[in-house]
Image (cartoon, rainbow, N blue to C red):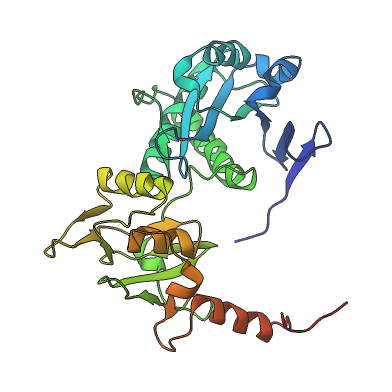
Length: 303
């Protein structure tokens, strides 16, 4: 895979404000902004074009997860104004808008992209998709479909760079193989046996791992809600042992501690709970060893 350049411009000069993003030789143009900046963004010409938009924010039921609403419009700004008065969009805090620089994106193109993005977001399973329905793909000429799939591929690549992860796909079993950078980690306390690997910056608990069924009284509500969501989605299921649940598929977490808290059904320091299967090192010790091999010694004062 070759390197790519994404050009990001901070419109307000602030990393948390409005920004634009483009890729060389791509006709698309991205605009990202906080919901609070909607009135300021209304002055920009690109939001009055035909395009695609994503409304993203914490899920009200499970704050550790995101909710996303994906839509399209002939005038993105007009539709955003409607959503701004819609109580069902209270979760919305950040916005991503995609239009075409040459204004060749038609209503049919936008509807095709909307359908495909909703499809991908649901497949990814990382966020709650707030769309009530999944619109069918409109009929397009073969050449237009190829163009829109290319347009979509650029959006998929750009979104994580811009801080949106709802399209990222869960690691495939074929990719979850031991490497020097990702050994097998195990957690065997409180009657469970879980295995995990660190892949592409995420901590992935592997299919077949078990998790304690009943949580501790001090367990954080956000993690309880997160695990309830995993059960509702069929990712954590009942097993032969009535005291544990079983991971029905690989599940990605933002950190070892988040994974350990779900597995142990209680607030946990995953850096101490997860251990390298082959050496017994804690995750923290393993990471420190890697840093020392890279020439970084946390015990040495460099001041």
